[in-house]
Image 1 (spheres, rainbow, N blue to C red):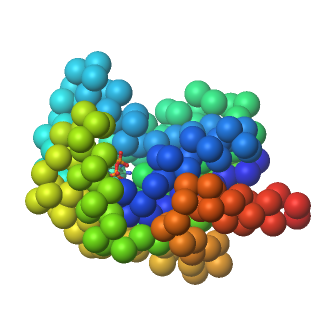
Image 2 (spheres, rainbow, N blue to C red):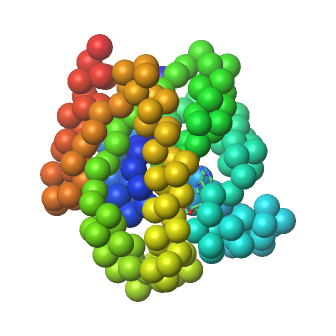
Image 3 (cartoon, helix red, strand yellow):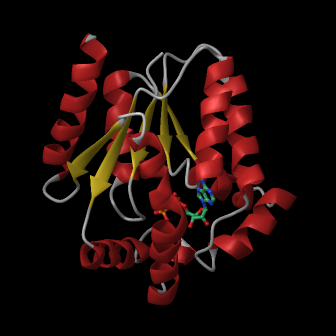
Length: 193
Ligand code: ADP
């Protein structure tokens, strides 16, 4: 299996690059944001509880997203690998993911971390809010809260995987194709081994 975490703050381009990466490498895309939005659309109790947190720019509880990922891993026994997008976002989620993958005899091969300046992030998210229909993309204070959660809680995920030498920084500004080529080059190096 080849398992990849695409890492970076909100608006760093994880969704855009994930689509291209899964097409090239045949990985199964697991986005906790997408999974949560589908729970909201179906108006499940989980979705209703998550929505109020998401609309404030806060993280939903670890046990909720860990449960969703556990479920997705079990339901995709034949996947040749997973691309994790927006997960893990805390150290507890990272440890849980490692334990879940271990049960499959697998692990995270690489964490590709997209680097984008804060001004650019806010610009991209406000712009996405014009068309995405996402209520957390329209208000600048909610966007700033999400970036705050990233600095307070999520950036520790990179420190966690850095201890295992798994993190590679990628410049997240430039054209979509330039960034895709840089990500692909790092994956190709590791697939060859
Ligand atoms: P973005 O990274 O662009 O903000 P996402 O779709 O990844 O968008 O996430 C949207 C929201 O969903 C987050 O602000 C958070 O409230 C919630 N969320 C998504 N993934 C997680 C996670 N792994 N842990 C906790 N909350 C999450």
